Amino acid sequence: MLNYRQLHYFWVVAKTGSIVRACDQLNLTPQTISGQISLLEQTYGIELFRRVGRQLELTEAGRQALPYAEQMFQLGGELEAMLRARPDEQQIQFRVGVADVVPKSIVYRLIAPTMELSEPIRLTCREDKLERLLADLAIQRLDLVISDSPMPSHLDIKGYSQKLGECGISFFATEELARRHGADFPRGLHGAPLLIPGQETVVRSRLLRWFAEQQLQPRIIGEFDDSALMQAFGQSGSGIFIAPSVIADEVMHQYGVQLIGQTDAVAESFYAISVERKVKHPGIVAITEGARRELFTPLNL
Image (cartoon, rainbow, N blue to C red; front, side, top):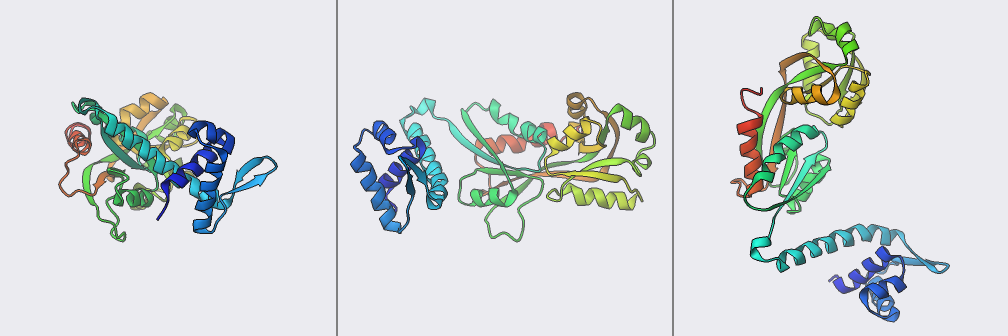
């Protein structure tokens, strides 16, 4: 079984860069610290540090072990703070994973209602690929995952998807591009320079299918998993770009671009994925209710 005291000594030495500095922080002798780290190395038959001159450097095994130790002792610190807090000071932890293909403006508007709860919430947001987020959800390192697709059926992970809502897409362009290609929507998109979402997104295939149905062949000049980066290129005039219609006003204001057309034939959907079939966490309840009441209302679609 892993000796957490030995692992803690390893972590402190790795963070401070030397046994001497670790001694000052832990108030222990060098012999104690080096002896405990040696025992940890002997237990698993590895070397965690190598000496280079007077300095200690992490070995490959040490570099791989350090992020795990970092997470463990960070969580331990949070646990201690929670246990020491008085009942009226305790915050509800709300750990949200966000699939990296979901537009940040949508994410903010979905999560914003949690900031207005009467219970004190401590929010942690992490962005990553969907499958990695779902793996963390399965071991309860996350409370919720926000995605543009429901739980994939091929994953052997217990989880439940709630559809938060959907909306059509809008096309945006700088004034110059709008003047050249925006007069006859959607025919004006034929041959126009276009920026599209990357292959990781669900909306990409729907968009390309819609182009085929409309017999349109825009000139695709860029593909982006990150919608904010796509919008930045669109702002510079590199090409026409899309965004969910529900944030059309925000996109025009933020990027100084013009709306040249909208379609509901291509829909973007957003989901909340959790391990609870019946949601109890107040943060998740706030997000689902807020999405249906304020964001994805008929008025906004």
